[in-house]
Amino acid sequence: MLNKVLLIGNTTRAIELRYLPSGSAVAKTGIAVNRTWKDKLSGEQKQETMFIDVVIYGKSAEIANQYMLKGKKVLVEGRLVLEQWVDQSGQKRSRHVIVVESFQFLDSKKEGDKPSEPTGDIEYDLENPPIDIDGDCIPFNSG
Image (cartoon, rainbow, N blue to C red):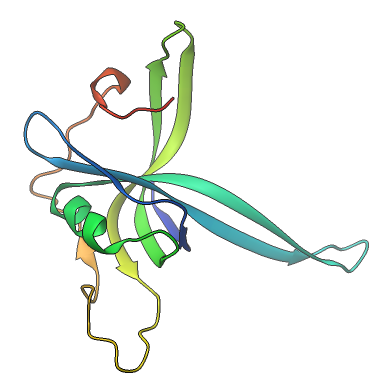
């Protein structure tokens, strides 16, 4: 079986960076991804935007916190995960998120800009994968 997701979009909010009790960094943000198509009946050009939550672990989370600002165009590669938790009212909740394994900044640099962000892919540390976490352990689970 294969669980692989590739998305290109713009970040929708600043990174939320937290540290687990183990000291491992966890970053959360969202990206907006557009899809454009032509309506077969009307011939009209249509567009939809999807807002997708992403989570980044380890050193990549710290790098994302430093350089992945709101509005930045990024390519993220990862896997789809179902987060489940019980909210404060006792109701079961769930949502799909992308656990990022690598990402790349896609915004072009303007002439005269100093390089301020890393270039190339930031690879997921396969030797130290993130810990599977249930919703109660996530310190900033917004539900």
